[in-house]
Image (cartoon, rainbow, N blue to C red; front, side, top):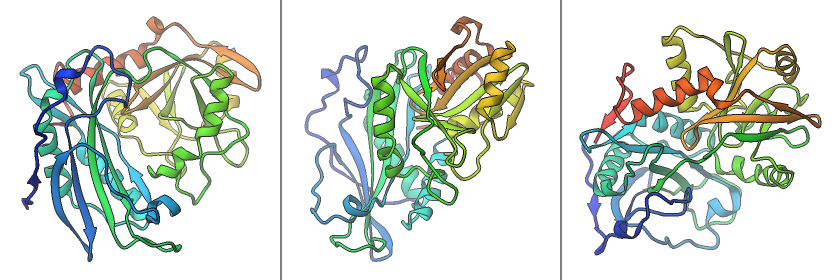
Length: 352
């Protein structure tokens, strides 16, 4: 079912001011944004308007009680110069899983897709064409009740804005296995993309960076023994001829890139195991020369190769990038599908 979207174009585009070869991730924003509001039990007043500040009450519910969720997506250019998206309905599905867990209204697919497509079409010139670059898309929803009191908000806003980006991790990352802080517990919100999950990760990540690491690997909240995910990515380890990734047990985000990598690997005949992975198993594999690769997967990072990790004060250095069969294969395959330089066997691409 089609929806009516009011469009208010910016009087002057800023795209000509951007140096697309030198973009710091998440700092340059495109001309427009999409917004739709939830009130009186329905989504209404859909509009595309110039990107800019929004007015917020000091008592805004989201600011005090954390009812806020978000997604991350990308748009790419194909060889014909057209814009296209990668698995957008999977992001909507995960957004609605997050909304349900956070007592927020689900967003209908027609509103999400129509708003997204019209926004990307309007700002199509903002999509970079440099290899490894893309137009990053940030859909998010937050509670808007002008009320101080612990209860679910009755009103919400959903907004999508975009920003051109280059690589999130321009080089392999060095990570610290976290053994003090905990990201998520059983029964919590670790499996949803809630803003608070990232707020609580700031201090542990900052402390790791002060020690010379780029990111951390979260471990379980009971024993600090089983790996879960990294700060911005799901995790994969190649042990011998098997590819391992932690199973989705309620504390780990269901990554769209993670799911895509699993499908690609299985289609190419690799053995992929989704299960609990202990640090003991990883260290033993390393000591026996079986740890061939370790990497993170995510929309922003795509494939983030792990150069090495620190566990209990000991450094473990992984093989050089050119020797990484699995992560190189996935990076090349995803990049090829994103830009239609490679066959899309899974029908993941949605053209605008």
